[in-house]
Length: 128
Image 1 (cartoon, rainbow, N blue to C red):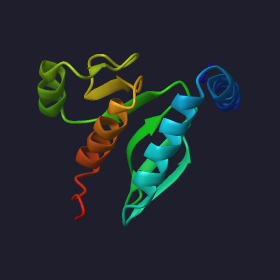
Image 2 (cartoon, rainbow, N blue to C red):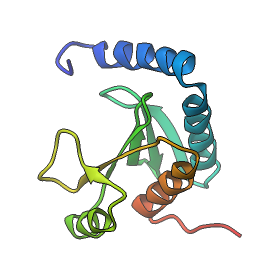
Image 3 (cartoon, helix red, strand yellow):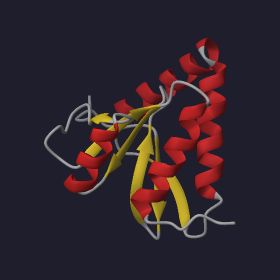
Image 4 (tube, one colour):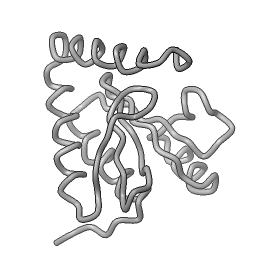
């Protein structure tokens, strides 16, 4: 799918529409994550090359989230192992031998953890 120009974006747009219809709570959770991350100084967002929203801190990707609630973040392998041992994250759905992790937002409590993962990825200090 990634080899066909714009196909990942079309797919993710359809996925977002499907999510809004079938799971509006998840759509709200994704909006909450985006709003929080974009409130941090030095952060921005753009379309990710494989669909979804990419979050950047000082111009460097700290993670991206797909419209089905799948959050992908790159960590060092050491941090990935720590997170995997905690049992909250999974191997990346494609790049299993890398530092990439996948985390599915499924319930309200997952929003805070997703935000913490993104903050940790960008080494961004928590405010207040």
